[in-house]
Amino acid sequence: MSHQPNDESDLSWLGKPIDARPLFGPELASLLDLLGGLRRNEWRRAAVPGWSVHDLAAHILGDYHGRLGWSAESHQRARAAGETLEAFIHRVNREWIGLHADHSAAELIEALERAGTQVARQFEGDDLDAMGLGVSWAGADPAPKWLDIAREFTEYWTHRQQIRHATGRDTDLEPNTLSTVLDTFMRALPHTLRHTPAPAGTQLQVAIDAPAVGTWTVTATADRWSLAEAPSGRPATSVRLDPETAWRLCTRGIDPCTALARARISGERQIAEAACQIVSIVY
Image (spheres, rainbow, N blue to C red):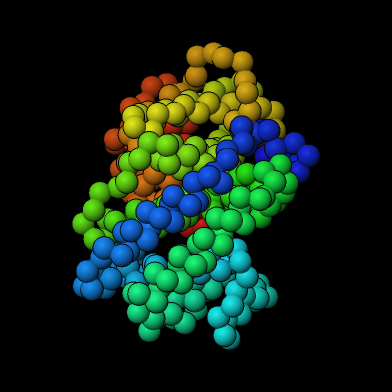
């Protein structure tokens, strides 16, 4: 199997389109409700390595402005010569957070509400069939707009969960939203398996338990692994995960070894191990 460059004319290997557009408004409301209820000391808690809850809230604001157009004084978004995508993104994130280090919680919440509302409205009018920004972890550059938008939604959702965890709250397991997040994350499977050889027709099935029930079947073709519709058959490998393990694996809240220990696996373990290397963020 030889992985071919992304063919803009045929992206069926990414699977059926996802429409995350209606979820941005409710997600913003949930974020604002969460942040509005935090105590002063909770804003200082570590949310992710090197970032406090305050930092992460500022980062979400930066994500919004990345879609609307950067506006903070002196903030440059030019990619340096030789700078990798990952290094560029991490640098821009650090710079943006630094610019907002002195903002109060109330100022951040107000700015998040204003910018988040604009982002939700912007996405409402987008054409899902158009081409959007690349999604590196799915191996799609450019990516269809539906995947670009869904990826953006998972970013906001993931950061809200990180704030919840940092402040002693459990993951928000609202089924419809969680199902959309995991459906988006699973679009990384063909790219994850790109170096895993298998005869054409070999299938891997990944299943997620309630409350975010879903099943994804990836099929090896002559050129790549694909989430496109394929003839039904007995998969060579089956991996079943609970939702908490699945989303935290995809965002590297846990490592692949931990996920494998929790997974229920049948069939060829080598393919299962390769699938559990999935990463659905810029990492």
